[in-house]
Image (tube, rainbow, N blue to C red):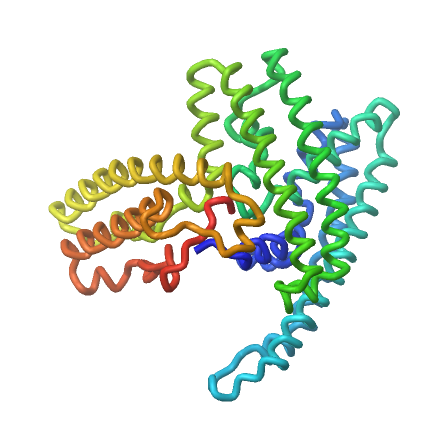
Amino acid sequence: MRSIITVVLALCALVMPSTAQDEFFPPIRRGDVLEFARLLDLSEEQRDAALTLFEGYAQEVARLQQDARQRMEQWQKAMQIDDPTQFDAATFQEAVQKQTEIMFASTREQMDLEEAFFRDLALLLDQAQGERMDSVHRMRRRQMYLREAPVSWASLDLIAALRDGEIDARQTPSLDEELREYELAMDRELVKISRFVDDLMEGGAAIVSDPFSQDAQELMGSYFKHAKEIRRINKEHARRIVAMLEPQARASFEDLVRRRAFPQIYRETPTQRALAVAAGLADLTAEQRAGIEQIRRQYERERASIDDRWMRAQDEYDDSFSFEDLMMGGGMAPGSPVFDAMNDRRALDRDFRERLEAILTPEQIERLPRDRDAFFVDGAVPSAGG
């Protein structure tokens, strides 16, 4: 069930490491520099110089992150309790706070490195290019702050969705103007979040160790307000953009937006992974192969119906959900449309996993991913927003 911990985790995700990539704020990537070059209209020589600057920056970030990981190891060991009877709450809380302090200190250093990179990049530019640097900074803020979120639509970048859908806004003047409006509206909110993150890192260790303190709740309430405003901006401008697109581009864009606005709903499931692995097994019989394909098609049809119901229910729920509801223990109660849709999806995944295993040999089943219940953990319901 959604709880105050959802917001704590979303807050920490803004500055703490990703479990998948073991990093703090997502550092600038080589592909980002190439996109900066496009936005700034750099010459080939300027682009190569920018990439050289990037290599130095990337080496420093890697060194910084490695150093932070090494300093955190002792506190990670303090959190590993083999015997539950030996658990000491004070020691555990201290370990959490020390890890957070290390992470936040490293994050601040990484942000300093980034500022230095952008100062050096600006030195490569002529006057006209320098006037475009604001668009680069706006893009970077979208990368940094549109990540995890406690509500749907709040981790979505519509400009990136258009780019990834290979939809060129410059070919449609009205769409190009709409994107400029969206970029500025979104950036006004992200500038506020950037200031908020500074405050978070000042008191972040205390928030993680005591999320129910008055200071923590005030900070979390502020973040929740920002997330709801970003949700509103994205929904409003997505509706405008869709109306401007041709039918084929519209369908592609709507699909990308739906998947990114509700990542918990549309991400790959354990059953999908199992079906993909099973289809690639080298020792399948022709009958097994045909059976797997039939199961896959039926699963995708039934899942699409449930996902659509879940998305509509989640969207309605998030429209009215408030931080006050969260503080009062609000969540998706059994019997609510969101709760029922999630349980139906869980039942669907289990059913089709069992159907798949029924046509495989025990040796083949052993080669499938073993995350069949990864969607829920002890009945907990994750947020659909991030």
